[in-house]
Image (cartoon, rainbow, N blue to C red):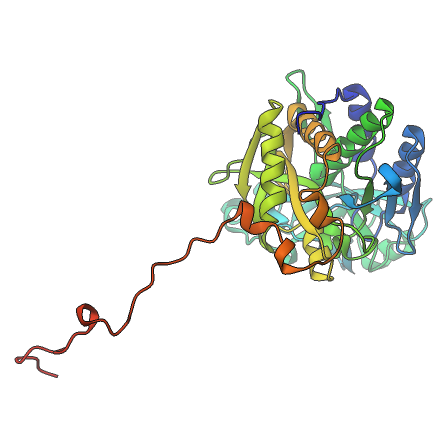
Length: 403
């Protein structure tokens, strides 16, 4: 790894991309617009790509002899909501798109996206008991749940028919407004940093590699998915010959976690199970070697694009890089340092050979060549005889034992 170079990212460009993406609503199922913008950015940096039938984008950064043996995956879709019913009081009942609690949407400004792109409405998610002057202390004991919130639409409506006359229908998407801010101290506060900050970091890493102009030893796909938040992730769009898959996503900053808002995290396990032993430790070693703040962490209530790929049968090593985010799927915050660190580590990784260059180049091989025992040696338990005299209790019960 000594010939691998830490590259300078175009941080100003990365911030521009980040703010652009955050301001485009893209709940799972409604991602066509944001993918157009991502495609324009890929064209800008000169990364060739194609789009699958379902809208997944696959870029290609060639390596020596045309090899494309690894992939990086990010997602543009976010959590959101959908109209479940038009209520008789002129408000909207909603259900979540993706996994998140209604408590983090209470008070959110939202955009209601109808089937007609010319008719977009705004509103606010409120508890069904929203006024302390009307309900007094009852608002403090009001239950939490999607059935206990509603969307107040910013139009003159007081009935279900009024809503229908506007063109609002069951199944319309409701997107939480991001309101992105980058503070003077470098913090980024916004809804939907998961995973738009990951997209910005990844595009900046690929941009730096393309501008360097040197051919990679191992080529890489860039897989940009559109349904990670609802569990589909990288279940489609991944090429069969990929030996390594690295997901870039939000890392969890909270009590009991080891991630920080200023660094990159390498997940050792999530809800799906452990990530690849060798690839994860390689990534952590790269960060240490090049002075990047990095932390190992375990995520208990979390899954990413790679889980979907592995469940779909991908025969690949898999790992997860994360930029630390406080209050994930809520009022999120990270620091520019974490996004930069993630992009820097990704750019370093893409310059390296495969984890086991000879073995990983092919999908299978003979047992004698399998490299794991060299890195993960077997520690055998000492032999013992279960019937050895010192282990046999000839009188299992004392004479005065009473049943």
